Image 1 (cartoon, rainbow, N blue to C red):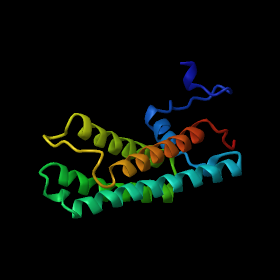
Image 2 (cartoon, rainbow, N blue to C red):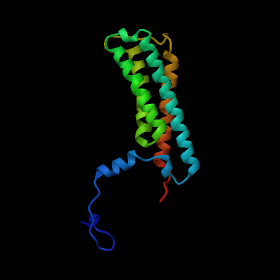
Image 3 (cartoon, helix red, strand yellow):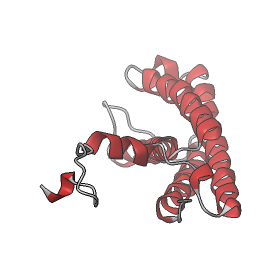
Image 4 (cartoon, rainbow, N blue to C red):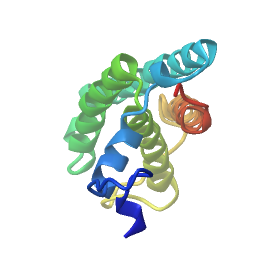
Length: 162
């Protein structure tokens, strides 16, 4: 088993897939060779977190303005509002690959959920883009998803310190 030997012939244990996945998910801007690039990723992360928090506040406002009375949709608005703020805080504080990805997925899924609700309907409920905050939330959510996805992509491909 050549993969289990050091160059000097010593035996080592094979590293499993789980530690590699964990290292990948915990990559952060502090490990980059370029400090300005690390600062750029941090700024993108904070900007994306702010957009996620904004989207979440919109959902909480709409929930309190009457969406809470819509059977399945009301609880989803509450979950998005609270969960989005938690994820936004994680993105802003940690700026790791897992947080950036979670924020991007949360924002994209929220925007896609609205579009599905408008064009197909969800749980028997059909939304309109003419309602308050619909268009602005789409812009906020797709922009935030793109910002966080770019931050994660740059973090993925940027050279690291050795």
